[in-house]
Image 1 (cartoon, rainbow, N blue to C red):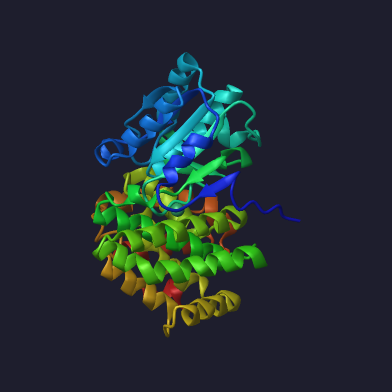
Image 2: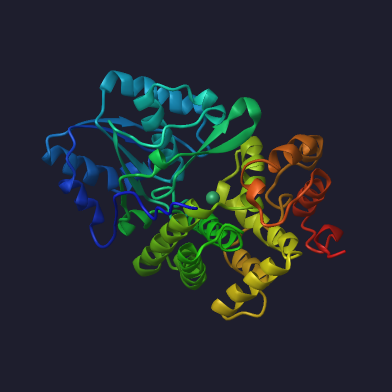
Length: 385
Ligand SMILES: [Fe+2]
């Protein structure tokens, strides 16, 4: 038995989607955002004007940067306790939205986020309305039941899961994506592709999510390189929707080892999540191709995007987006990496790796990590015995 949830209350698309804010009843709005981007690209001005017109009181919690920690969430909750919001809006990249999701839930239930992975999280929000306005196109967090938080003391990112993390409204206003730097377009777009592919080859797939995942793979292959190169509104808008579709899919199914590894590496090195997924994906697919049914699924995807070999197509897409092809190329220090390899191996076996279509043991994971570090796609670990 499986309960499918494709979005919270609504996904708002189309021109000036942000104007939908006019229709939502709210009086005290706690806004969570990142650095300067939302202020510089006009998004915050538009949001504040809309809220002002509704005579809503607002508080802006800004400065949530990549890989938000439990401390960031706790700081936000302290401010919420003083402000007493009825609505939380996460606006910006995946990090502020993920942080905002945890702030809203742990504030409402007065729970300690440090203990979140050892308790059953509440599954509904009763007090706080939650709205997500993504300005990057990748995480799908505006529709998912996950909030990814970095636990510094454990050197790992944990994807907390609850239906209460699914936003009530996901507002996809693609005009806000135009200010994305090229590198962010590339990395977040590859994160979305990784969501769609890991979902598509996951053993928990069903007929509904299969269509969404395959559609997202096709759409991202069609528009991501153009969105990166030209930055035009049409391709940005398409990728914005396809990444959300990938989010709707994986939120119901789960991911796989690329995410398990990237959360372990990202928890230690503070590198962008999408970049790490982009690097990992070809290696992970190669390892998972040992499984005949995964191999067949990848053949389906190759057919869908009209290429001979899907893994080669992912590598080519990475190259066209100027994404490094190994951890070493991504400038992770060799000595430091090898010194930490045991901890990284242990952490890479956690999280989404638990639902990888092929079971992986400690020694295999260590070999996979070394192969990704040195860029060895021909390593013995990827060969069928
Ligand atoms: Fe991701």
